[in-house]
Length: 223
Image (cartoon, rainbow, N blue to C red):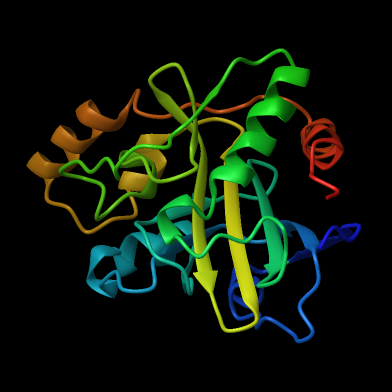
């Protein structure tokens, strides 16, 4: 199937976006989601104990659980570009192999970044895990995710259902490991070690979000 993409742009709290269900019939949809409050978003099976409740409260940051896997990410208004891509099961982009299911979207990001003058690569190998990847999403590298050199730029997670899939993409305007780690339940020694390990593991894209979204939409497949 090669339908046109429906595009929606919505602003609101992260909790509402992550509570979304796949509405049938599922259609090709891109959602550009802008958070209005900062939120620490943990993966579907990540223990809530990974978050420091006192630090979250003091910083005015919501704690939200997403329905897709992986470690924590920090969403900041104006500092996080969040794009969801939804496809039905009969879409040409659909792959039954979960390990290859996001390759196509990684290629879309790679092409869009090239149009913006940024050279990038798509990860198509085995899941890369580190000591910190169960805790922090950008500490590892998964299928279809996009890097600039050795640094991860586009993080992805997916939720698959009977009727289709939702692939969630996140691009930071600036990678700030310290801000994220400050909100996690780590002792002083582990926090210092994590900061040293993660300071340069990812990167950001300091471009106007509208420019990035336009480049991304222009590279979506239409067949």
